[in-house]
Image (cartoon, rainbow, N blue to C red; front, side, top):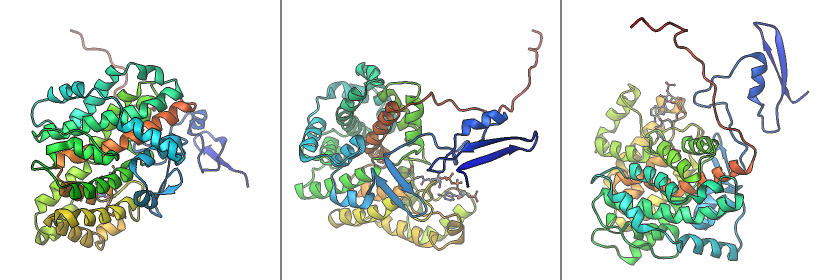
Length: 420
Ligand code: CMC
């Protein structure tokens, strides 16, 4: 048996034989020989990268970064270790990690300039709008990012700087949205620095060191879970923009814009709004019926790849318990648990393989830490920046062409402009 596909155009009788590689992929551009294209708007059966970063088996609920299971990474490592692992492919040695940690946590950031960018927006502006535009603005600041497009070493050097800037930009955008003053990053963990940088935005009356320690570790785990997720919509945008040889900061702006959407990273904010609207456990059955009648979606449920469970959701449930132990319980958790209980047994959701995804419980944890719902997608984007830059670097390090899909034209044929 040969590792090939035989494709016959029954309209013409023409046949082509195309090799299938060891991963089950064939080169779809071979179809051009038959004069046909594959139509795949959601890219359900179209791979656009050979990637060695993240492995997902959606049926089995498996997620691994560089081969390491996500639950082990979440329990035993720090976000900076995971960032190093994603970017460099291996767990660093103690010395390598030390150098990387210090490069990120002590990078020189032009905070004043970032603050001026944030303050140029009207009061109450959504922090994702500020973040997206902030990446583009940082591109103007870092002219060297253009040369880094073709320079592997320079691309690696950008990561600590971009992570440090993202931390400041995200924290300032979150604080400005709620009209509170930001703080100064301090401490030896990325999430801990981020929490301190958010300042009064999460704790207008201050926060005990004990609470801060628990919340920092919880956020660290949430950051690890969000660091990468192979070719989702945001990462696809990062790669597509990068394929035009745009600089990494401009590409980040596009990736973050894709993440902002409610079907992607914006779902965590939408979940919390949905839970608040339902309000009480007693209203859950009626809400489920409205979803089944297609009045709206059950936000935080369903996933393109995971069809049995999202392994990140399992870890997040534990994080929620740890956060609640110091923050006190949020009554919205009872609403979420009831929604999950009913949905997991309802034929509509079971037959469509809809399960809670990463966004279903993450918002509850963020809220308990003290974040405003508008901050939630920023909390997704901040760690995902590492994944985006790693994918950008992986793509630039290999052979690629500009991503330029074909279309199926369905518009008018040629027609003369009416006489004027
Ligand atoms: N609530 C109700 N019905 C749903 C939902 C939902 N959350 N998700 C999918 N369905 C239905 C959908 O209407 C369709 O039904 P039918 O076949 O009868 O028309 C069926 O399930 C299959 O859905 P699909 O739209 O073909 O699935 P997809 O793979 O294109 O979309 C998704 C995946 C995540 C966009 C979708 O499940 C969704 O919109 N979920 C809610 C938003 C959400 O929580 N997004 C966060 C995703 S995880 C974080 C991230 O990585 O971004």
